[in-house]
Image 1 (cartoon, each protein chain N blue to C red):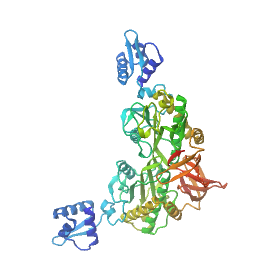
Image 2: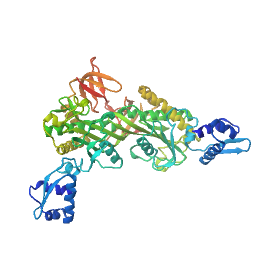
Image 3: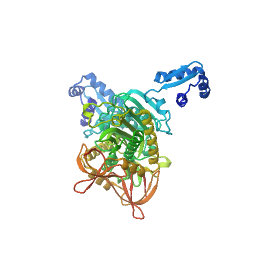
Image 4: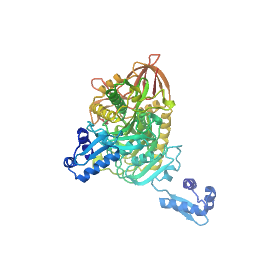
Amino acid sequence: MKEDILLSMMTESKEYISGEDISRRLGVSRTAVWKYIEDLRKAGYVIEALPRRGYRLLERPDKLLPTEVRSGLSTKILGQVVHYFPQVGSTNDVARKLAQQGADEGTLVVAEEQTSGRGRRGRNWLSPAGTGIFASLVLRPNLLPAQAPVLTLTAAVAGAEAIRQLTNLPVGIKWPNDLLINGRKVAGILTEISAEIDSIFYVIIGIGINVNTNSFPDELKDIATSLAREGGQAVSRQRLLQLFLLRLEKWYYSLLEGGQDKVLDRWRELSVTLGRQVTIFSPNFTVQGLALDIDQEGALLLQTADHKIVRILSGDVSLR
Amino acid sequence: MKEDILLSMMTESKEYISGEDISRRLGVSRTAVWKYIEDLRKAGYVIEALPRRGYRLLERPDKLLPTEVRSGLSTKILGQVVHYFPQVGSTNDVARKLAQQGADEGTLVVAEEQTSGRGRRGRNWLSPAGTGIFASLVLRPNLLPAQAPVLTLTAAVAGAEAIRQLTNLPVGIKWPNDLLINGRKVAGILTEISAEIDSIFYVIIGIGINVNTNSFPDELKDIATSLAREGGQAVSRQRLLQLFLLRLEKWYYSLLEGGQDKVLDRWRELSVTLGRQVTIFSPNFTVQGLALDIDQEGALLLQTADHKIVRILSGDVSLR
């Protein structure tokens, strides 16, 4: 973590910092300082070095490196351990393996690119290099497996709040966990769970956000978008990921302390599903109706044309 | 599977079978026949060999060897692939690893002895060598994670029916999934699940049955028992395991085809919890009341002294 301290020293100071200063404040030798600087340069940081003046940070890499994710991150637990991959099959798969090996709560897996990024039910999630946030968190909540769907809603709330705070874009949540802007999908949550029948071993929360994606393949053009396309300007992936972690940490620990109702209320506020006529497509059935509310377990309550209330646990929502 | 055929040939025939006969019917050489016989002997089968008359099976080992489990097993899927261990940490752990590697539905892991057999919530499950059934099944049901608790109830029903059919002992189910005889625990089910939020990757159903256990340590004497202790005679572990697999297969596929109500009704018939005053102990609360019923998701409905209905998803039931 000395590299984190070094980076924050250089970030705070607009001036040169002498090698001697750094050496003293980190408690390491001048040779070690030089090695840290070289490591940072290799990772993509542009650092100027002038004789007798010292070092100055000119440019940060546009990458979700552990140093970038942690720099200025004000969470206590989520994202404090980061596993970074330039390219990976799926961050959820990596996080699951880490969880099985005992990874702590809050461990974050982040990738620049996913070669087999997944959405729900094995669907593909487009994850081209450097354009989005493709990340997965290991959580170990003291909840019942039946409460796990609420975790998904919690992550959707955190994602929507982070996007609103950073971009002011009118993002909303489509049940259960897609984030939409102007009717197009900008982010999704993929939750996996490993559990005994009445206690959870671990949960993996995967999030994919289209941040600076410029173009989408034809089949996605009408249904997907990115923050950059909607807002007309590039968005900092680093800052967005940090905000997401911060909002999620707040809501997640509130949930564990019995704050489920608050999470559900916030979800309702951010929802674009409730109060609308929707069609639910599931492998086993299709049903139409008015989306009335969600219940304590995150299920969608639908009022059909014959005024029956149907409780939906799973399915894809079409908003017309 | 040629060993299975050889065994069933010897089992059906009370007479000697010539090596030539076996060789012809299995379609293998006489040398191969001799090797099969030697393998069976090593596994514990006592086989007499007489010159010019042939082979005769005198004694089967009292072990849950794959050949023993499959011999006469009339299921289509459950237990048709068997992984056998003289000793193992926990059959659930082995089954989980197999499932992660892609093991098919119905794959059975069985052990003579577990060195770290587990019950719910990490509790110990006494598993001394050769005395019980310690087994785990890999299932891949097309169900929602929220329906998984019903799988546990299904396994409890299958276990109770198998025990009743073989021993006539008055076994009953204590919610959710303990099997009791005369108030003492004789078997338990441990279900594990790996899932996305709305689809199941795999389920592991572990079952532990105290079959021929003669003595229990002091701390278990008043709360645990075995079929042999209750019935006064040894019980065939092989036959019991086969009956369990057969009953489970029937109920499980009935459940997948929409027969949930039938499973729940059968559970109600076999229950020793419903209609009684009970106390529920959970890590988070203790509640007393009349056990009224279970609902569609397997939760216990409790009527408290002030006539409120409490829905219990998790906890230990004390019947009193």
